[in-house]
Figure 1 (tube, rainbow, N blue to C red):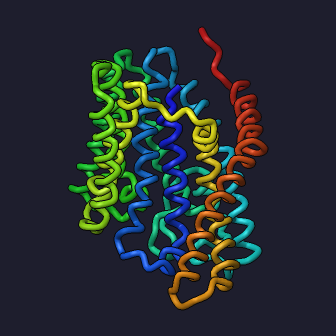
Figure 2 (cartoon, rainbow, N blue to C red; figure 1 turned 180 degrees about the vertical axis):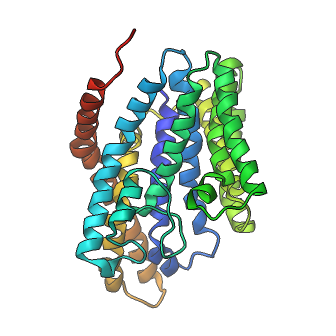
Length: 350
């Protein structure tokens, strides 16, 4: 059990949740560049994803089909559920949406993980946070191809090589295609960082790493994630968030190897529900801010600050609870149904 990875999943989801309460941060007078470090939760997710894919397949018994079925069952059902919900909401109340519209062409592209550009100029699907899942599914596809290779290190090298080639191609060749722009961003190297961490830990086990060193790496990664956003807010995301996130993940794993693991049931529960929290929170954050902020006293005094902090904490608790319930009552049953359907189509062994 990777306890600290579960805790990082929970942390990453809650960081993204907090970031999307922009009205509260503005009310608190948070300096520009400080709040955006919370978007690093996405980068933590990407690094963790790269690590987990190597972790799950390191025994060499997973076929490309099995891998794709497992990943599809894990990602697609709940994403489709919330995408359709967002589409229905945009159709029923378009005044609450900025760039999301009830357009069937955009819906199909969203459901099939095909990047497209919205009217806002952003490459995002109907459910705007789903842009990260376009990257995830693309990474899974490349990684699935690598599973035809016997050597674990060669598999990692192949996948990382493809990702790096795409980045170089994007730097050398400019095309108007949203998919080309999207999949050649340096951001995709964060998956390779996660795979590199897994390869190092499983081929050269660092059992002797002192807990103090591991803690220092973790703290350095966390601090760097904040400071890079403050002092270099316009720098490439891979550098201001990707590398710090990788240090944070590496440090957390080394801490667990040193015997320092977060085994609290709540941390595990939030980690399990992190995907549901991530997909659910835009609906709740939007509603909470629109309803609540108008009732917060203005003026910037201690009463205002206390009210805003209380609203933020209460919102995080409420969204976390809703995410846990969604994980239990919607996500888990949908995964079971999807697995049952796809297992019937599993290619027969020769």
